[in-house]
Image (cartoon, rainbow, N blue to C red; front, side):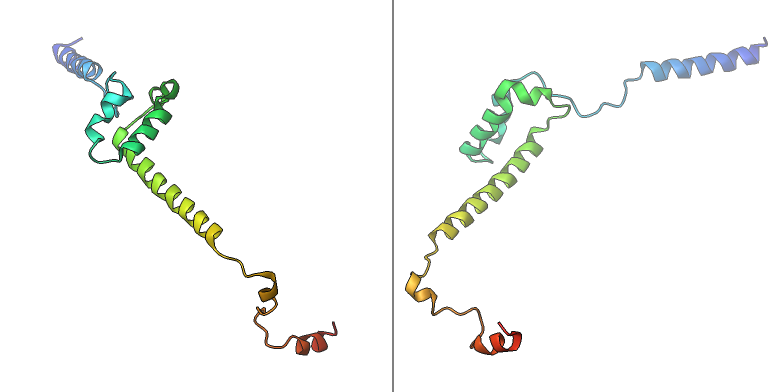
Length: 128
């Protein structure tokens, strides 16, 4: 083996060693630190309602559910939780409005037509 070949091999080995010792591109952390969930939620107390944070903590803190996730980005999870809470609230209000609508008394229902002024012409036409 010549000296030139030795240098080439040596350079390649150094590159391989550098690649092996170089830290891999770090993905998003699996869990942000080992802090309890309540401690990690403290920075968000002014941004979100206390009831929302309580519900979030009860759900994700149950049996340390949040630790079992591959990636748990609290800010994104809270944002989604807020959107869903707004959606649930709107649906709840819509259901309450539907319950509050007043039905016509039975005797007044006969006055409401199905949109046809005179049904007799249709019964003759279709021989009903």
